[in-house]
Structures are given as structure tokens and as C-alpha cells.
Image (cartoon, rainbow, N blue to C red):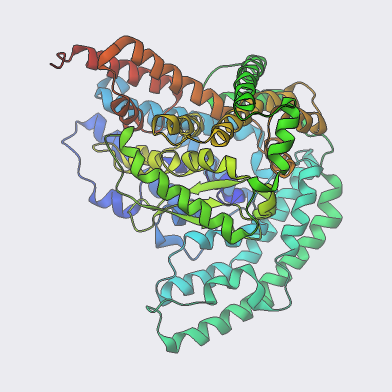
Length: 601
């Protein structure tokens, strides 16, 4: 999965921010001659990018655009309303452009932009911005954005100081949204919010140097003059002690006394205002399909049964004599499946990444130029987040992509899951998808960095199976890990729809997950809580994987001996991130083009 951006900003954005280019890239982009209609479309794309970066500074920072590194997204109700009004006006402007006058490729760009923008406008009525805090992020983990900031010059540090000084008003804005959400009955489940208390407390320190916000000042690069460093450190300590800590202390009091008691006891999205329509919307948005919750639930049950049968074969292969449930318990608890220290676990993740890299040429003709690295998930969020995630590189190539791995409690991070996890999060999964997307030629920049969950996470899950084609699953326990990860995503279809539309309890969802997967309880509980807090998102993985696998089977059948897996995989990535229907149309056209080619030899 992708690393969650500061959720408060992401929720408040309510516009197609993920679909556009950095200012510098826009300025240097060369394009062929355009007619007036095409020109109007591309001007709209550029205008929306600029609006997105200006109104969502955190998004700009994540994209490598440094112009707004000294500020946060304005979370006031007036600013949120202004952004939503801007989305509606942009949609009107887009619809005024004659789609029929565009080339085939520009019609695709139009359609992708319209699909996302229409849904941004459509979801406004659900007022998600009234829930700006979750157990996975929010104003209480605002310092996390420092992970992607450059800190290479004095100005970079002064921008961070300015951002630090600007934080207390944003905390107050979040409190105002939470108060309105509580009054409207639009709150997160209490079981999730109880996790947030500790995250807020981590910001309340007596020693400013122990604040997460101080981390960039603990070490300076050579490019920052020695004579500037002490002054920067002194300013940071002062801001933390006099502004940030008091703001978080007040937030902690508000959260504990005013907000937490008013959060909802229910976990189902259908219990929110207009909840059934909201969950139906989210299921369609994340899967980019019109599948109903009931249909998705049934697909999940079918996949669970199929994968269980495959797991039984692995159990027999390794000679385990007990039941599948007992085999799961063995995989969860035997010490041989775990590293003893965080450093050993981290070193092993790095080694696996190096093992994968040379095998990529077996399944791709095109290898992206952007490098990637492996980093530990920050300690302050590791207990409450997933096993790993991916952070895309900067659009201009100045920051590599990073595969973040969770080193918290190595005794619950089994070795057998590490290969499948690395294939998904790093290469050829998310890193290939994002890096290749940035290198797509002759497309507007918003298409190069676009992200549709069903495509992106479907590709990540599909990439796990490419390990077989690369010869990386020679150990039966690694194959069990791949099946465990496939099962993980199949279980999601069942428990997400179960909890949010069929009345399942949290305990029932945890039990179903544990009964069908060898993942440890620590992971399972975090996963279930993630599905509770992010309804519908987890449905996209398996639905996307099934579609990509279906298209591969279609291509193999249609092309026979002429089918080249490397070319198929390149074609999927060359499409860029799009709704699944658009991907299918693109691959159908690719198959037809391959059929028209003269046979070799």
C-alpha cells in the first residue's frame, strides 16, 4: 500500500490533487501542436495542478514541489468550502470542452480526469472532512511529512521552522471540524480513536529535543554552514516548547474530555449519516467498478475457498501433520520464522530487495530509471500501522522511491511473508508502477503520477505472483507467504463488506481473518482496524488483481505462442493508472495490435 499522506489535508483537499505535475515540470514540458480544444484541455490540466499545489501544500511537498514548504493546508470550513466550490467549477469547465474534438489519447486523458473529478464532487455531501483524525494519521502525526522534505539548505530548515510555527492554528482548525462532526454524528469509531490518545501524548515532551519535530535539527548536512546550526536549533527548541507542545497539550485535553466520549460505538460505515449510500459510493470508487457489496462479498468467499485448498497442498509438501489451523499457529509462533532484533529484520529486508533486482529482466523489457531504497517506518507510528508501505519518489527525480518496513516487534514479523511483501511494495510492485508512470512519454503530467487504487494495488498484488515467473519462490514457506498474502486480500473482500454492510462485529472479522490466514494477531488487529477506519479501500486490491490476471489469461489465449509476458507487463504499466474499464480497453487494443503483427520466424 501507499504511505498515507497527512490525512487531515488529504480529506480536506476534496479535489484531484493526485492527478497533476510539479510547477517546474509543467514549465518544461514539450507538447505537439494542439488545436484550440486540445489547448483548452491542457490549460485546464495545468491550472488544476497549480490550484492543487497552492491549496494543498503537503501534497506539493510530497511531489517534490518546494514552493509551499513553509505552510499547511488551510483546514477552516471556509477554505474547505472554497476548494469544493472550485472542484464544481472545474467540472463545469471540463464539460464545456468538446471531447469529440480530441485525439484518442487525449480522450483517455479527459476521461480519466473526469472520472476522478466527478467522484470528488460526488463525495462532497458525505463531509469526510469532519473526521480529520484517524489511528493512521492526522494532525497528531503532522511531523511525518519531514520524511520527504529535503533539508539540504538553510532555507529548507527555515521553511520547516515556519511550518512548525504555523501548526497551532491548524490544530485548532482540526478541533473545530471534530466538534462539528461530533454534533452531526459524523465521527470515527471509538475503538479506533482510543489508539490516537497515545499518538497525541507522544507530541507532549518536556525536552524539546525529544519532540518528533526536532528530528531534522539533530543532524545537519555539510551544505548547512556550521555558523547557522546552533541558531536553527535554538529556534526549533523555542518553537517546540512555547508553541507546539502547548498546542498539543490543549488538543489532548479536548480529545480526551470533549471528543472521545462523543465518538460512535458502531464500526459500520452504514451507521454514518447517509451511510449506506456512502459505503456503496466508496466500494465503487475504490474498485472503479459497479460491483455491489454483496457481489464483492461472494467473490471474497470464493477466493478464500480456492486459496485454502492451495494452502493445504503446501502443508502437505512440508510434511506438517496437523490441521490447517494448527499449521497457521505453527507459522505464527515457531521461533525459526522470526528475527530477534529490529536490525536483523531490516538487514533481511534489504537483502531480499537485492535478490529481487537482477531477476526483473525475466518479466519486463522496460526497467524504470528511478532508484528505490528501504527505510524503517518511524517509531511513533509503527505500532499502529501496517507491515510496510511505499512512498513514491519526487516527480522531478530528486528523491528516490522508498519501501518502508515495520520493525516494531520483530517477533510478529515472520520471515515467510517478506518476499511477497517486498514484491508488492517495492519491485516490481508499487515502485515500478509509480516510476514507470513518471516516465510515460507524451502524456500530461497528471497522468504520469495518477493513482487509482484498484489499478495500483491490483498491480501490487499481481506483482506478488510474478515472483513465480522470476524463480523467487523456491522455498515452500515463501510460497506459503505468497498464498497468505493472496488470502489476506481475499479475506478483505469478506470482512470489509461484512463489517460495513452486513452487520459483522469487529471480533467476528478478526476471528474470520485468523481462521483463514497465518498472519499474526498483531497484524490482523491492525488490518481490521484499518478497514474500519478506511471503508472500501481494501476492496480494491483483490478486485484489481483479478482483473489484471484475467487480462493476462485473455492475452495468453488470444496470442498463443506469440504471447510475451514481458511485453504484456510493460503494456499494463505503459497504460498508466486508470480505472479498470479503461485498462481493459487498452489491453484489448494491445492484443489486437499484437495479432496484426507478422509472425516471427
